[in-house]
Image (cartoon, rainbow, N blue to C red):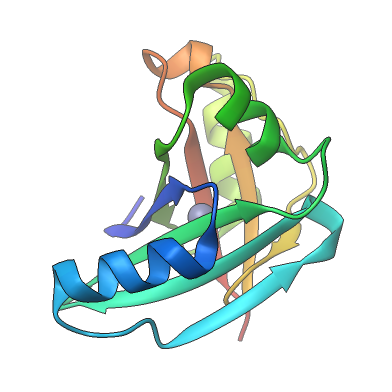
Length: 133
Ligand code: ZN
């Protein structure tokens, strides 16, 4: 794994949180993107070298809707940049991690993504991201 690619934060109201985090970071979000297959609308902020993704549910059975029900708003996942997502999935499976997407899927921000089950990482949802070139 390379660097942290971004940190994902689950929010109830994207518009409200865009304004809040723009104040916090001193800079507005630079894009929003809906991933219909995941039932999420996202926005992205750049903070120096780092990226923060806000996620709002667009459907009642979206993973974000379920997360908000269970835990409320807050940090949802940490995403790591990888060179070769297929090789990394294989490596992690061999290490005993449960990979939720054995075949990487298309995520926001021009990435192939796969998630690991949080039970295998002390409750932290880990996202692997490979830039689509
Ligand atoms: Zn993410």
